[in-house]
Image (cartoon, rainbow, N blue to C red; front, side, top):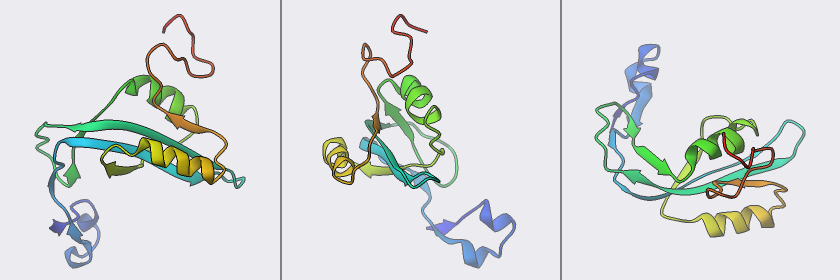
Length: 128
């Protein structure tokens, strides 16, 4: 546990205490987000992947994540749907129960990392 380096540049160090420092342990993860839009509609995404065993040589709690088809998911699932760059991470594969929960909550469109060969709406089925 240390202080938050960026916040401590403009705040007293004692109010930035409590940051976990170090590389995230490799293993299975689920990346997800549930949020409301400005017009009060829920939207969500879920993607399973893993933390890779890569030394980051950086600060904070950090890791290198691998998500299958991440380039396409980022472009069509996150950017096109205006999701911000922050999401939540669960350590383990929990895509099935999270997708079921979001469905139960009435989320009309739940994004996920589609496998190669399953195009996103508006994606050219013949490639880039």
